[in-house]
Image 1: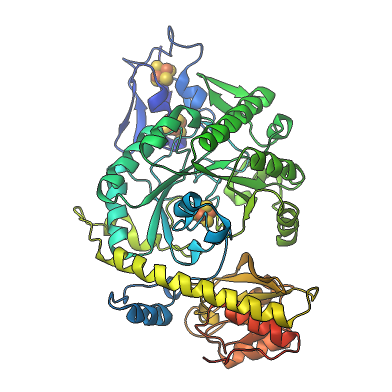
Image 2: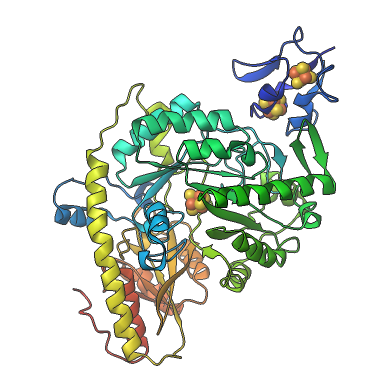
Length: 64
Length: 495
Ligand code: SF4
Ligand code: SF4
Ligand code: SF4
């Protein structure tokens, strides 16, 4: 029940970080990562995972 | 880039004469773009807002410099001319990656630049994503800078989707310039430019996306106009998609109170990896661009001096000194020293008055001598700023193009060409590039030119003139025009 970010595709734009309702996404080292313990796939908040909705690169925020 | 930047390192702050001499020897930039209106054509409040802004006043762009800091990487829409691995192509040239900074680093960099470049008058945030969507970072940067440099003008550029939410913040922070990128007012056209937007928690596509974007852009324009914030509208001209439509865009944004309209050519190449690049969508050529700009000339003021700068550009328009101020070169602690900028401002205040008087004098001299319906002439000018002919032909990265007729001298556009002379010796193919770039123009004014390139240009039918070195552009262009019309040039050529 979590998403992950495919590091090699990420542009490090940070859009996912501030759309995440659970503050599950953090900038660590040189990339953004999703904390699986905090990610709910946005259930209970929104219809669709916000990180995947906003991410400019296709197939970058994907089910872990 | 070595020889092409406007170096003010040697600029001694002393008397006005010293400064004038320093500018002449070190060079600085030229005559007129943006709104080409002089103070007498504008209400005083508007003039006060634009007079030091190089993008909003063509006149100011000869004296003042801007810098962009790339603090806003996130974006809420996808444009077909943009590949998000690179910078936003709204304003910046596509295919470049700017130096991304935190707001704290950006503020430090601005101070360091202000200490070194006295022409600095504007800080803009144009990405690399969308400055209004990535608002927290944009706002923090502006606040940090305003604390230390209260007189610097702040501006941002955005696609407008998120802007209505932050307009009150803009007022609180005294931001009186905003650039909106508006490529369509018909959502059907929009569907060919925007594959999706992220809006109200969902990714939206097709007509829905374009309609929402359009409505928010119009709302942004109206809200800004109501509050007295000057709006520049940027439009990317995409042949076959919105080229004809931009005439309607021009009329509409003018009706809604946009101060300036800037039509920029699509820059598209497969290696940028953009949708348009990959599908072979071409950009307009110079003639198509000028035709559209001329057709719009009766609408909102047209900006013709936009250089589609990088999101981390530093310096006068047409130059980029960003590489001198990369973060590794900015000290950990910097404090602002206002002396250089203050002295420079005093100098500009006097200098621009003189230049205006010289332009007026040249205009009336020409108007009196040349028949009212005499054909107009185009002249290319090599300049480093200050409204003077002060650049060596071989150092020119771009030429500013002026049109002159009985009505006076007008800036038309700039044409870029690669530095023809890098190490002191021209290369044959570079010269050919210059000749191609200047198609349709047979006269170049520059501060100096070597014998060889001059002869080669002559063979190509272009006359290069260095007799007006360090003259005001208007004065020199008028004199050349009068000579062309068979009249005495009127000023001592080497005065
Ligand atoms: S799916 Fe939702 S909760 Fe999980 S990381 Fe993405 S935005 Fe955050
Ligand atoms: S939105 Fe996508 S590209 Fe941007 S930081 Fe998140 S994962 Fe990376
Ligand atoms: S991109 Fe255009 S508007 Fe922006 S600073 Fe450059 S010239 Fe001015």
